[in-house]
Image (cartoon, rainbow, N blue to C red; front, side):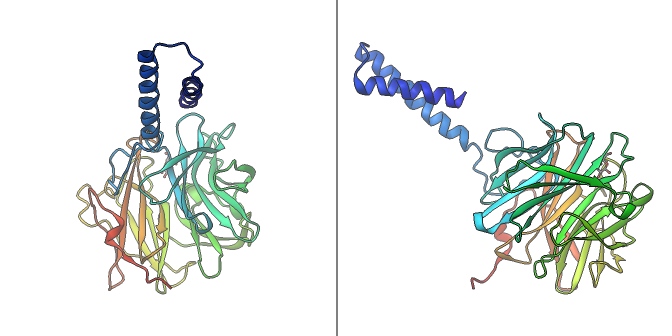
Length: 349
Ligand code: GAL
């Protein structure tokens, strides 16, 4: 529609310029006004949001004026492009995994569906990682059937962050059931790991190291005895923090965090990090990822989904800052409206 408008407008402008029309000057003026109004509304429609903060649980529109439809996913920062890419479940048409891009984490451009669900019955919690050696983007996701009994990991690949991703394979990691997944990359070694809700219908979380090219799992795969879904992982100092939800389907529940001296455990249950969580439901959200925000010191972004009964185009997001206190406790406080100025910028090298 916008490009149709642009085409007509450019033709009209061309005619006016070349004075090829035999229109009355008043009609020419009207056409010019139509053109100018159209041009400004087109420009406005491309940047309708202008957000300067996060508003957890509230409406969040993308550049297309529609609610961001990108659930259960992760954010990847691509330094060479100075751009954040947000991947997640897309409930609109076509169903699959969506990608949005942003320069500031508040305003997002819809980059469209990058992996179409097609014949895959369940395609949930996509997580994308960049393979800097082979220069390709690898997506891992929860691959399943409508009854959630296939319980596999799916792997898809693209040479561009905005897809399209091509499904390579799907399988049970080392023979274990796998449903909700989290992703952690060690910045120093570039090794990547997937935490996955595993056997006996998510009775525990297993942590598995990926192969060097991120296309497979290795045998370094342990039951970390954490319970049980939506795992998010961060490392502060020498301590690993694993945040997870309980297992109540789409309904929110009290979250729990665990700490360990190594990513592979042993993990110790530390209770809920959600401070002042009156509903005892993780501020009505379920964790999907912890994003370490570049450019700030110890800036960890809690990414949670407010499913509102089930995943849908309008399920909202609860994005909040995660604090690790001087005593090493994880705390997540609720803010109705907050921005990145609460973090301390990293000193420029
Ligand atoms: C939740 C899970 C969601 C989705 C849902 C289906 O426990 O975290 O990702 O799979 O169950 O009921």
